[in-house]
Image 1 (cartoon, rainbow, N blue to C red):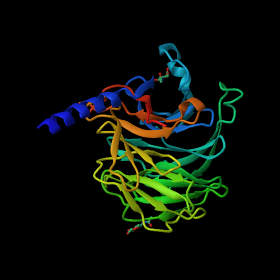
Image 2: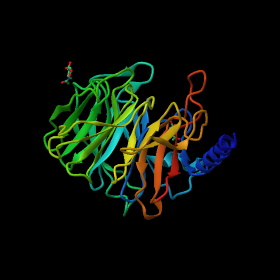
Image 3: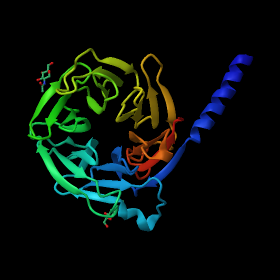
Length: 331
Ligand SMILES: *[C@@H]1O[C@H](CO)[C@@H](O)[C@H](O)[C@H]1NC(C)=O
Ligand SMILES: *[C@@H]1O[C@H](CO)[C@@H](O)[C@H](O)[C@H]1NC(C)=O
């Protein structure tokens, strides 16, 4: 009995402590579904918006103070003709690949609308208010649903097709694409198969980390640095984690993945049980969290930035506008 009540007290203390490791950096109006997030070398945050035409890519300085009058200065680029910006990944210094296309939670993805673009943010360190140079790298007419992106090298991007249940390699110089992984761990399982992905370059060979939403799991697999193909069996990093979305990975192979419906950010490492590091079921602190990225500025060591879609209310509407939250995970 004593032991149990002690445990209850320490658990309560733990959750109280965890609730204090977050800070809302920026909140969009309602409804604003933030889909993905990435950090630039200047410490700025790029975030993408789902189901709002034209498709918007925003930039937020987590060190700045925003108020209502500055809310609309965060738009970095709008992509005409489509309503969603999906994954974002830096493939060369200051060059970010982004995926665009049509998607709505009610009707799903629209095949034939998916493109990959290059967004050059090299102006940020000298002329932060300038507009970025944007060019199309390729169209993906046969992709069912382009979702997460992860740079394999300066010449290649890996793309998660959540409906086909595959990983596609895009060759940047030629714009050519082909399927490189089609595995039981990437497979389509309703509502979505492989979703978020990141390439860890700190290992040799590199390791592909990915979530599979329908399989409720997170995987890690060694891949060929040039082709992106599997060179070993995928390992399960976390299982029974309903609806994982996008993820961030540190150089030691620790993954932090977002669970929108649970409203939690979860840490997973090989050989350890997965653990919630921020948010809680039933709390709006990280309600609808979709994605995470590592802070890169000096003051951001031990900080992850997450994006949310605002959380779902009981009627299926949005509780609030999507927001960006800083989460301290310790250093
Ligand atoms: C920015 O302004 C446009 C048009 O005035 C509006 O539709 C949009 O919701 C605004 N975005 C934000 C983030 O306030
Ligand atoms: C992936 O594999 C499945 C069978 O395992 C096959 O039906 C499907 O066509 C493959 N997809 C691609 C894009 O190769």
